[in-house]
Figure 1 (cartoon, rainbow, N blue to C red):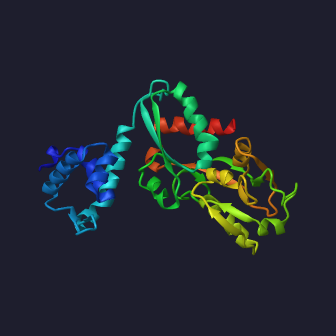
Figure 2: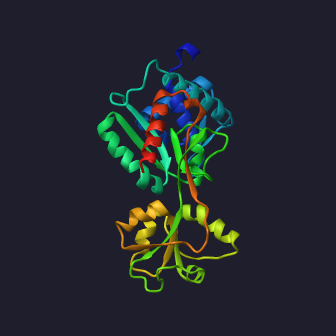
Figure 3: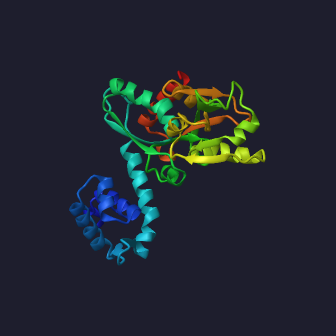
Amino acid sequence: MPLHEFDLNLVIYLEALLSEASVSTAAARTHITQPAMSLALNRLRKYFGDELLVSVGGRGMVLTPLAQSLIEPVSEVLLRLRSISDTKVGNFNPATAARKFSLMASCYVIDLLLEFVIAKLCKEAPGIHFEIHQLVWENRQKIRRAEIDMLIGPEIIIFPDLPHESLWEDTNACIVWSKNRLVGDELTLEQYLELGHVFSDLDITCFEESAKGFGLMRKMEIYVPEMSTVPRAIEGTNRIATIHMRHAQLYAKKCSLRLLKPPIEFAPVKEYMQWHPSQDHDLGMAWFKNYLKAATAAM
């Protein structure tokens, strides 16, 4: 197949196939049917003269050596194509724009910021839609590959070599059930270490290393996947948790909780937004970054 006959949509399908190593998953990711993706794979095999993906008995499919060598150049080509398609003359008008922003954020960010932003933009910019991915340490590489538009997370999550900007800073609080009789108005270090802790991945990232730095070992009794689940796991128990102050204040209104000052001076959390360099001149992204900064200033 000569280059001038090469369908540029095949680049999108090829990138999905190389990333997922699965016809069905690649089809779902690019919003086409599985037979259509199989047809695209056959066309790609014919063009490259290689199988690209081969079945391994009972273990799904694996990339051929040629397919492995295509991962980086195909990703780079797709980034450049997206950059070209996003380049427009004039101003970005959110009231009439039709666009989707894909974001990666924790429940803390969703509860504190994104729920408000999305609800407000539903009226102000009805053509703007959102796709939100859970913030997981292993998945943050998606921002480096430009598979998402923005990552919002604490400083420890952010890649220092990619563009980023500060959004807000928060302190920390301990939360207990309002009827917890083991703790008074002040929380001692002894109580903090004796009580069982409810914790999440974000807790481990932000607090556990700090506690170890003080030479302390907490009783980590209940693990939950997201910080938003922590307050619910506290209710009705004598356990304790350490979470960010704004989140604690938000859930104190929804759950029967008391907020206490931690007996350890944990460092404040700094939340950042991060994007791929290919979007530095994207008018829509520039508008959205400014919108988020304005929203956080009003929090």
